[in-house]
Length: 207
Length: 207
DNA sequence: CCCTGTGAATATTTTCACAGCT
DNA sequence: AGCTGTGAAAATATTCACAGGG
Image 1 (cartoon, rainbow over the protein chains, first blue to last red):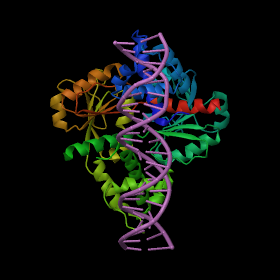
Image 2: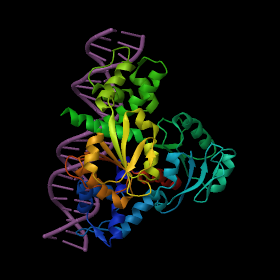
Image 3: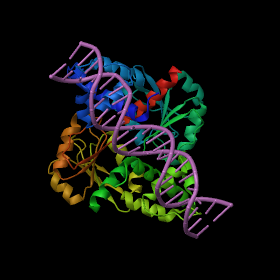
Image 4: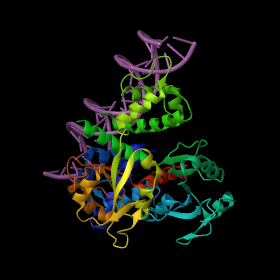
């Protein structure tokens, strides 16, 4: 089990490596990776060493092998099925976000409570009501539920999804979800990200 | 200058506090805040102490005052003007995201290069081409540029925005931007967030 | 000679634990 | 009695620096 910081950096290294590979490069040094991210080469080596001994002393890392290893650790060497709950503006943006499919994340099901939306299709995936969620989820092989409903409905939706057997949630609603032990929630709060920038701005203006 | 972790937690405390305040609560203890986030009360006190001495010994914190202080530190006691670059699905979702306006972030300008979109309005804000960006930006009081264009156009857009005088960027494109010293970029990478979940799932499946 | 992998040193962050205020 | 604010200890994370492989 790697620590969180290492995992986050591995994800970023992986993206950088895939770019280099696409441009035909086969080898890379820890220093080169570090430069892109302006961190230290020691950090990169330490992170990569958590994958086992992979580099070639005096030469660097074989990009192709490294990508395979990182993909393996991150679980990106297979497909994951997604359920989208909430087909609003944000839901649509997520559904059509090209980065997901590219990394193996596939929306297999869309749920919304607005009767005007039910029955419509996005790229062939029909928008459903949330009745009989459990049965539908089993048929569709859902690994992760993506919640993009308003804040005041997120808790209820989460409970529903969990009781239907999904244990991984990506939550875009700006509330802390109360979930049973063993359910994993990842929060993405867009306003929170802007507030971080706001802090930087506030500090800057004060100088 | 506070450290990053503290700032991120302050943002979350702030949200929790605003919720409590809305429900009529006037006082709160470090322990109560910690419980919501399942971290320790010592952590909460340490974070809050960076605002100066604010709690009442033996009693707790005055929620109203605490919110004002945190808002002040984060720069949320004023409005910030946003420029949206890229009026696609993600751009639209961001524009209409309710959390931004609530925290004082206001989209004042939209730019897109698709001629079919130019001239249309979203909630009264017209979509423009990016010609004469510098002049337009000055008139509109833009503090932060929100970039939601495809990955391969992000760098060029960033350069344009920076040369027009914007120093804070929130980048949704999955690429590292190369910007001059003094320009602050905050990255939000949706795929990256999912990859974190994927790692958790991968670890789980292996057990 | 150049770059990895890693012990050891350093720096940073979190937690403990308690004096002191109300 | 209850809770804050904070030194000091503990835990984590990062960087240094160098032995060793190619």
